[in-house]
Image (cartoon, rainbow, N blue to C red; front, side, top):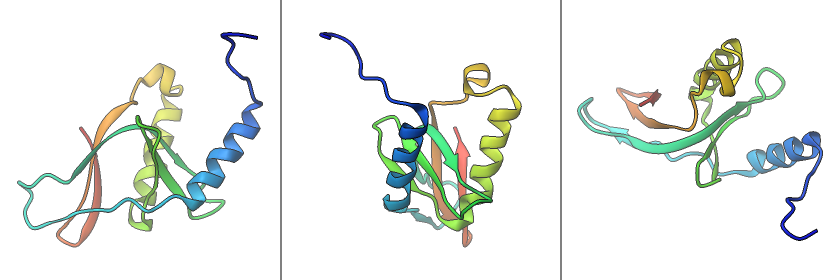
Length: 114
């Protein structure tokens, strides 16, 4: 079937991403000394979380890189996913892809949609 894309069941794709997320490296959050500094800016295609089933949250960049989020950003990931779902999903909300700035400022991890 020349030119056809392979189709896999959604559960198989989800399980594959979940395994990749569990083994993915943690995002390296830069420590900023003042708010005028810029943290790590990534083009994020997707935020996902398994909370409360397991303490796992991650992002997928537009370059298809998967990075785990530290526990300090799990609530942010959960809230962001809930916001998108409450709005009818990403097709309705059109929140992603978008740039997100990550860092640590005043001893606290942060993620900010830009």
